[in-house]
Length: 154
Image (tube, rainbow, N blue to C red):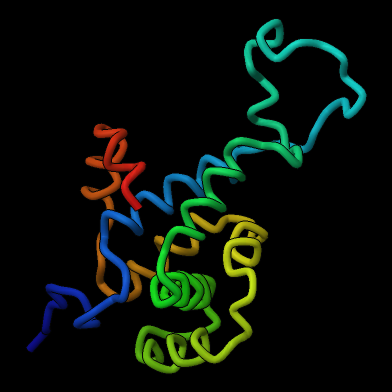
């Protein structure tokens, strides 16, 4: 007899689905940045159709929003994000979720936002980690995208 997995594999994720979806969207916005083309550019952002928002600069607004969103979370929520990334990139299996959470809690959590923002494809790893735990965020992400005020509620 074939069994069908119909729900999440964890009882308590440690972060709400809305918050996770919002972080994923912010991470994907930041992931879309490109290397800076001309560091000595003297033109005006308005004249350039605000294209610099897509360039990876120290004052990149997408990076700032992502970092602030992560910093606004509790330490438990930040540790959950770290464990989800590890799960999403294959460092742990779904069966090892408790071990991943414990290791994330034990690591030096000095600058979690900087650590996470420095991971290429952060949004993809977070979503893959949630998916591995049986949590489908597609609908939550769609709602978050269609209601920008929800995106700002971390």
